[in-house]
Length: 353
Ligand code: UD1
Image 1 (cartoon, rainbow, N blue to C red):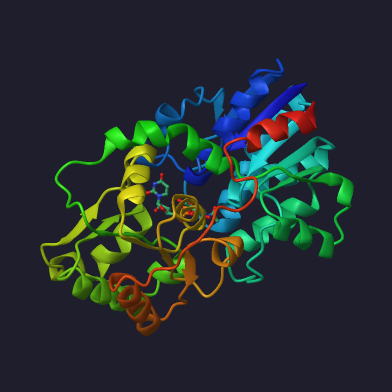
Image 2: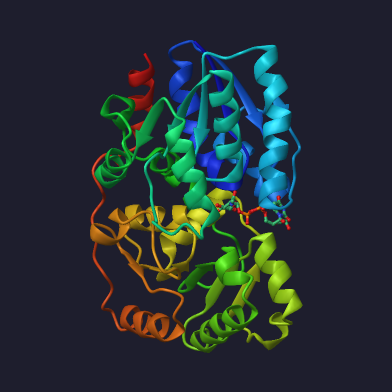
């Protein structure tokens, strides 16, 4: 088959890498298109290198913009590519704007779409990713899910059961493959015992009152246990505007976005992770590290029911209470969800075969 993969943003890269590798064995003709949604070296290029992704055959260079502009630019620039040499199948990953934009163009041109990480639902339509998930799933022909709940969501939305394939978690494939290499990539100059923090959702960081409150809570904790915070560019812009960095004490480490291996190394050794990311909730569950999610909901409920994740909401008092619990040794114990075993991409290859 002639298979075209679309990636655009940081969380796509670690999902596409194992799938491309697994499909190589079946001698498909594969093309990789980067939409350019993420374009900074440390949000994109370094991931290609560390994940062993081949260089993109084409970069659409859409860059940043409003949701409408970014989505529309991907669609406009994608259409001629598909018309020139229509593939047999386009594979899209996750829930970013590039995912939905590419899926829409394909569906209008009659090109079959496979969605990797289908069926996740937060049931919160104020999240742009939720719109991207629901609509991408509606126009996909192959829906690859990572948990039973994801399949149940798709069934409720009337997606034919024959299109849905429970294969497991491709992001965990990457983690399993690279974990041994990550142990040599711990960034230098950092403490051994720490809380690792990532926050980048517009719902959190674009709210000046909330972002100030959360930094004040974390700053207070950093007097007892160091806090390491690698920052997404959006978060950096917001905290500079609020002049937050000057108020932080010496055990609060603000870092640039980290490459995959360094961030994995930090997650593995963390005492606790505080996040609003989707992928980090899953990675901590696999690693058995306690995770507190600063959001009102999660599209990954298996990380709460089986894993080490606790959803604390956008509620700093609850965050403080849960952090105290972990610091006093009462952390949540978890187990690895079924099929998060490092072989999800191989199962995708078998389905496509
Ligand atoms: C996107 C995804 C989000 C994912 C996140 C991971 C959507 C709707 N959101 O959010 O689901 O969790 O990626 O990182 O697709 N910027 C840079 N350099 C870059 C990229 C972005 O400086 O390489 C800055 C720009 O100011 C930009 C802002 O970050 O306006 C937001 O980027 P954007 O791609 O719109 O969304 P993310 O917040 O990265």
